[in-house]
View 1: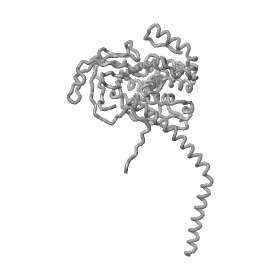
View 2 (view 1 turned 135 degrees about the horizontal axis):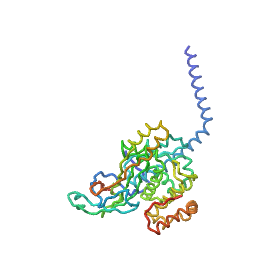
View 3 (view 1 turned 90 degrees about the vertical axis):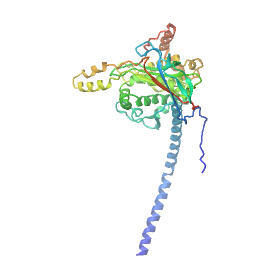
Length: 156
Length: 243
């Protein structure tokens, strides 16, 4: 029996292929939420080692790749860590739809420390609330940190 | 004996058939109304599914998220949303009534999707982060708004729809000093600033220029926009204290 599939529109993507190329990157300079950075800022990454596709060199080591700081989440009370979301990596001849590249870097999360102390101290009036003042860590991407993004060459 | 049995069976059979006919006659108008209501709900659900899935696919979100339409907003315990526990985005009727175009629906969905995505990351498979998001709703309100802008742009929706959507649906409280939510005017100003810096093309070729809700936002955000203008003029990177 013939199967009739109804497609109501032409899709600009096709995620059927599972072949992916891992690209390991490190920031050229330290990126930290404690520094003066802003959302939309371009940051540079460099390729950690040569990347090959089907035996051919695709990206040589130390190639600079530009990315964008998408969102900055500042650290907060109750051990809430700062967070950096970096995406929009720009690689020559690679379309954005072919990359799985969202990089999320969070600082130290002190929730597991803060909440038990808070609940233990709650019977003593106001003391439990003091733990609100404990803040989470800053998000930091150092030059020796490695992040991995994935390139799907057969995606549209 | 056989005759009696036959009579009893025929009595039951006819009675049941009469009864069912009577019921049919009685509930017919209701069932038609129900059918119409179901059809209407199906149309809404399909629209939500379509736009929600557009957002997921265009943003290459590799986590599972489902969408639902519900008539009634249930009271939530400690602000731990279904988004964080079931990874389900629910659009309630009250909210849906205020949605005019696809951009606004995408705005409503994109905000919640960002919460769901957050619940997948972090310690203990995202459980700790989900609790923190639930408890620090004020902080994450702003983050969700910003992520929603990104998701909308990536999926081809106009992020100014988020401004008109929030402008219509979120009331303005007196203060947010000791509150779980930010002042709506503050949220709108932050979104406007975010679009100004990251996606200025939407303000340059503004499709919402003749939208009365957008113009209302412009009118009610004069002082906040003046602060942003000053920030742009001085090229400052400091965060603005919006009102």
